[in-house]
Amino acid sequence: MIPGARLVLLGRQGSGKGTQCVRLSRHFVVPHISTGDMLRAAVREGTELGKMAKAIIDAGGLVGDDIMVGLVSERLAEDDARVRGYILDGFPRTVSQAESLDKATASRPLDLAIDLVVPRELVLARLSIRRVCRDCGTNYQATGHETSQWSCDNCGGDVVQRDDDTPDAINRRLDLYESQTEPLIDFYGKTGRLAQVDGVGSPEEVFGRLTEAVEQRR
Ligand code: AMP
Image (cartoon, rainbow, N blue to C red; front, top):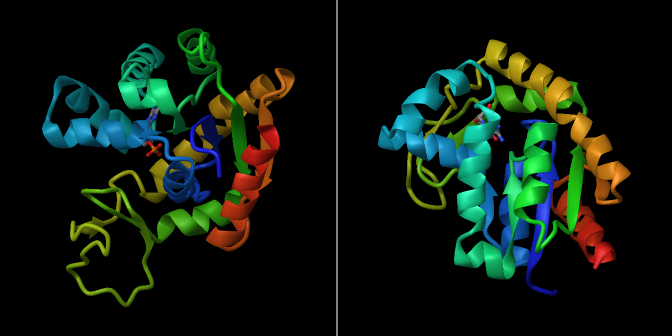
């Protein structure tokens, strides 16, 4: 294992992307930068950004490119990301964000963008049973046998259903993914920075494919 990497993980919501990002960040010893987690933290803290973002997130829409680019550029300028690298989760989501990311990282370019491929029908089923720790963001799958008060195995925080995991918001996010984010596959493909990885299988199998894709690139 060689520590350090500069990665983007693309994939539909519910593709297992978040969980795999956590594992990849431990494996390559790089910070996991999730724009969804950053926005949800701002919502919890009641900052101006959080107040603005909440309605957009709950409706399954996209926060403006300028705001997102500012947020990520600041985070990438911090020591850990500058020195070791990063794994970006949920950013970029539009071609304009990807172009800004290229400008912001011109001196230390991205190693690889990985598209985690999971069919829409499968993610729809997964998202409806997704639960998440309010504090650390660990994902769980509801079985229907949970007690009403569900605590996170990782940190003891409350495990809840995300406000934006309603059927309408899920469908809106998946539509937006197809129209706004899928063009990134072409964007990274044309510049020789794309790997497509089958995201169907056990978390261990998928993780194995992801690390192999990164190692092949080194
Ligand atoms: P996620 O946890 O990545 O599914 O993000 C949750 C929500 O945050 C999304 O549905 C968007 O409303 C918003 N969001 C996160 N990242 C971005 C981004 N890069 N651009 C625009 N909106 C974003």
